[in-house]
Amino acid sequence: MEKLFRTTEISDPKFESDNLRFITVKSKNLKGRGDICVFVPPIENAENLPLVILLHGVYGSAWVWTQKAGVHRSALQMIQNNELTPMVIAMPSDGLWGDGSGYLKHNQKDFEKWIVEDVPNAVTENISAVSSNSDLFISGLSMGGFGALRLGIKFGNKFKAISAHSSITAINQMLNFVEEDLENYKQEDNLENSVQGILKKYGSPVPKLRFDCGTEDELIEYNRKLHSDLNAANIEHYYAEYEGSHEWSYWQTYIKESLLFFNSIL
Image (cartoon, rainbow, N blue to C red; front, side, top):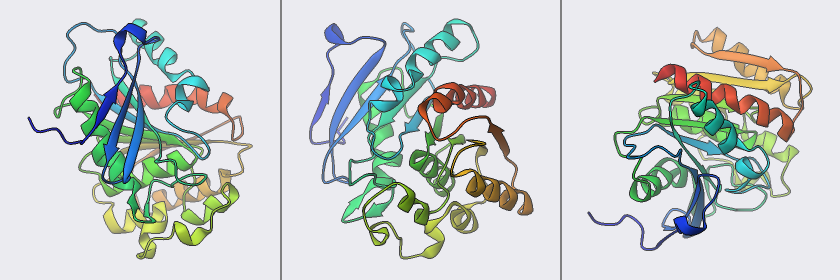
C-alpha cells in the first residue's frame, strides 16, 4: 500500500516505556513535521481497537496529556480493572503555531485536516492495533475542547462521539490565552468561528456529545451558554459541572469521564 506521508519516524520498542509510542510524520497540511504521542494498551494481537484523538490546550504539545495528567496510566488501570474496553489514545501536537493553532485553517496551514485526516492515517499506518475499521472518538481540554467540539461536529461522519473539558466555545475567547492577533484565527464564514455556528452549519446529526467545566473556571459561563443553546435547539447531550478551575488537576480527574463515556457507546 502506498504510504500517505513522505517521511515517518516511529519510536523503537526497545527504548519505549509506559506503553507509549511516538510518531513524527511530514504533513502537507502542516507544511512540515507533526508529532503524535500514542498510548497502546499491552494487548497481544489486538486488532481494530477504538481510537481516541485527545487534543491539548494552548502552550502544550503532544506530550502534555501523559506528562501532566498521566492519562495513559489512568487508561491502563481502567482497562486492567475491566472498567474500560482496550482503546488506543492518540495525542497529537496542535501543529505548534504561536501559542496555539486553534485547530483551524489559517496562515497557509490546515490544522483541521492535520487532526481529522493525518493523525488517524498516521496511527493506522504505524500501530497494528488500529485500522480503518476502528471506531473514532475525539476529546480535548480548553483550546483542545474547542477543537474536539468544532471538529467532532463539523466532521460528524468520522466520529462516533465527542467529549470536551473546560472548553473555549468561540474563537474570540482565544484572546484570554494567546498573544497572537485574533485575525489569524478568524474564518471567512463567521459560522465557522464558534461551536454554536458550527452546529448551525453542520450539526445534523450530531455525534454523541458530552462536555464539562469546573465551577471556578474562567470559561464556565461560555460552557453554560453552550449547554443552554443546545437545550434550546433540542440537541441531545450531557453537560456536567464539577468543582475545580482551569488546571491540570481537574483534567487529570475528569478525562476519565470522557473515556468512560466513549466506552459506554462501544
